[in-house]
Image 1 (tube, rainbow, N blue to C red):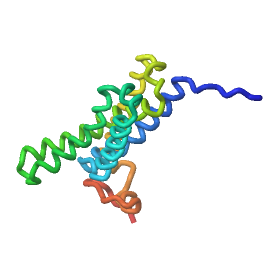
Image 2 (tube, rainbow, N blue to C red; image 1 turned 90 degrees about the horizontal axis):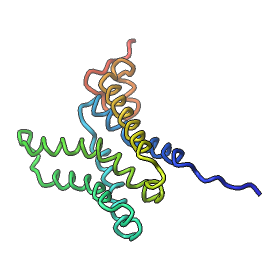
Image 3 (cartoon, one colour; image 1 turned 120 degrees about the vertical axis):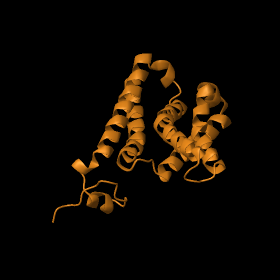
Image 4 (cartoon, one colour; image 1 turned 60 degrees about the vertical axis):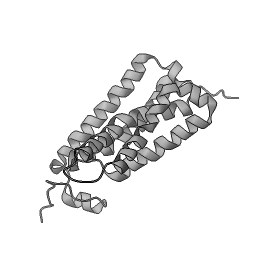
Length: 180
C-alpha cells in the first residue's frame, strides 16, 4: 500500500505565492495602465476578506490562530465605509484619501489577507515555515506586483487598443491601435 507523503512547508508556500501573485497582478497592472484600481477588484477583495473575517470570528480555533491578524481582514470594510461616508466631490480631500486607502487596501491588504486565509486553511503553516520562507513569499509577491505595474505602465509597447477591447476592457490612455 503506497504511503502518502505530507506536503513540505515550501510546497505549501508555493501555493500561497501563486495565490497571492494571481490576486495582486491585475490590480497592479490596472494601476499602471489606467492609473486606478477598478471597483470590481476592490469589491472582490472586500467579499473575500469579509468572508474570512466572519469565518475567523465564528470558529474559535481560527480566532485563536489568527489573533490580531484577523483585523487585517477588516481593511477592505474600512475602505468601503470611508467610501460611503465621504461625499463624492472631485475637489474634496476626503475623496483623494479614500482613493489612496483603496489602493493601499488592495496592494498591501491582499497579501496579508491571503496569508490570513492560508492560515485558516493550513493551521500549521505559520509554525512550520521559517521566517526566511515568509520573507521569500513577500519578496516574490512584491516583485510580481512591481513587474505588473511596470507592464501596465508600458502596455503600449506590447499590447494594442484592440487587445483591450476584445478582452472586454476599456482602452487605457496611451494605447496604440493596430496598424492596418
